Length: 180
Image (tube, rainbow, N blue to C red; front, side, top):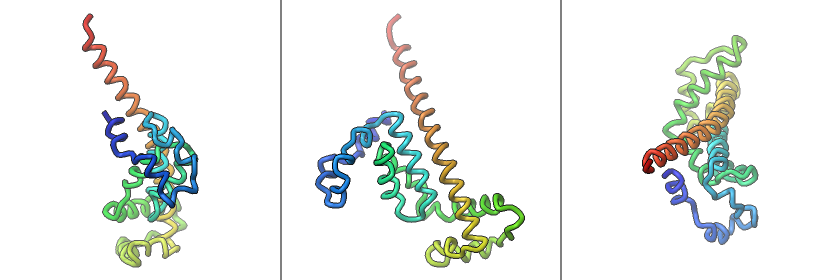
């Protein structure tokens, strides 16, 4: 079921081959594993997408797709996985990343008030947090790096586990429907 749903949204390879911005990738772009839906390629795509979703505030989809081409993961799944972070989810994620970063940096870093963090979020369209490379920027960057690595690893193994459970459930249903 999920496999058919994913395959419905995968773009046509002929259209991609005709795109002037993607021609430089040549035959690597048409590698079977980049578009095939199986447990490994989807898990690698989810992992790559989640990594770049948390690591980069902008340009996540191109970065995830580009890296996914070279690590042979499912490119469309990687692109969709980056949408975990979006303009609506960035402020709470950055605030939690700030709290995690302050916790990891320890007592040597003075905790900045929530008001100062809110002011930094409003500056420069939210990128003010990273531009203030004092306590706020370093803490948020460290928290986002922790989120990127941990969500990437967790996403990889949860995808494998969910795929395995789906296969087991389908097999159990099929065996229970066969006459004895």
